[in-house]
Image 1 (spheres, helix red, strand yellow):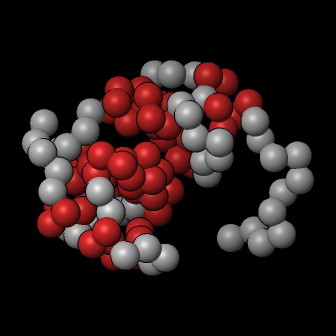
Image 2: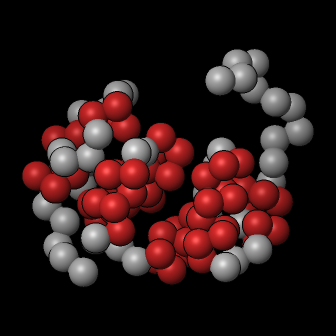
Length: 103
């Protein structure tokens, strides 16, 4: 895998980081944040870019610790990694009350 530089992070779709200055993102410190955004809101191009820098098992390992993850993103990474959904933290700690906005 390649080294991720700030210029590479800027190659991801701008809508992924609508609330963040992507120039300030650091791959080492914000890796989980970037992975989560790509899983939930990324395009196929974003997914391929992420995959060129990080393996599916590593993405799954990072995703196992997320407190929340959209159901489609969870199903996607669970299927690709062959890890049952029940092993993901976001599956076992679902919010008891749904958020007000349902997008």
